[in-house]
Amino acid sequence: MFFRTDLALELKESGHAQLTQAPCETIEKNRCIINRITVTENIAETGTAPGEYVTIEMPSLSDAVDENNQCLDVVAEELSRFIPSQGEVLVAGLGNASITPDALGMRVIEQILATRHVNKELARITGVDELRAVAAVSTDVLGNTGVETAEILQGLVRQLKPDAVIVIDAMAARNLGRLGKTIQLSNGGIAPGSGVGNHRPRIDQDLLGVPVISIGVPTVVDAATVALDLLGGHALNDDEKQTAREIVSPNGTAMFVTPREIDLLIQRGARMIGMAINTSLNPCFSPEDFELLTK
Image (cartoon, rainbow, N blue to C red; front, side):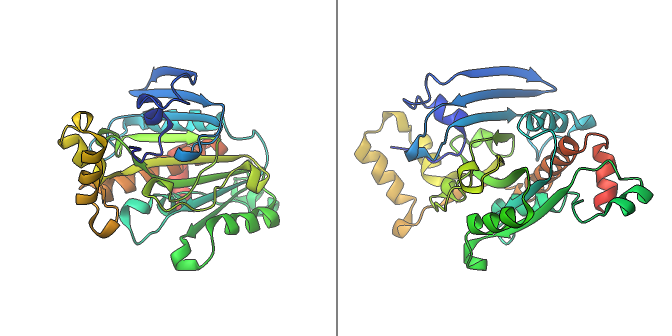
């Protein structure tokens, strides 16, 4: 039985045949554990595409304060490895602002300093002439707009011609212990909704024609996964596992579990990711500078 997860690290830990031998580098820095996994082939059933997947595990975003932006600096440093050194960047927040566990992407966009519209003379006289051109957009969801996120981004890329696109979205995890304390970065693109079984067109370099960097924080776990863990899932046969899944999926509707402190998790996660994007794109300013500029 396949358990839903958007984390390449969890797929590797679960013993997935195509990821067991995938190269993995693990380092520790600033209270964070960084795992870098290189995937060389497409794993269709999991939605994992070829690319590098960086998983950063840190103290819980809802329980611990990031003193001196130590974890933020780690995220910014890892993100900088994926972003082209020059050129305009489009930052896109995915998700649904009306559903808290799915609001991460749109909350991150509120933290991004958009600079594409600032002309050179205005930038010079205000002292921000060193800022890189950045555009930011919240795409919302198909149910609200009637337009696929992939279609929105295709249109924007065609018009703006950025050198890279950064997309942010909430994710699903296999392990309850990773909710709100894990950030995944990848250059393998992203399939919105895959973690909760609502697969939408994949957003990657093949689709947009420019590098796509995805950033996500797991905010939900499949309820069936939790139920099976409580029942000692490893000791159950396939029929028993399927029965357990049906019990926690009334009328075939999948249910998901999210932390009680999800509001705080989204708030702090959005701030960390937003400021990490800002500082990786424009390292001449600090997170505190960007907080002043975005208020």
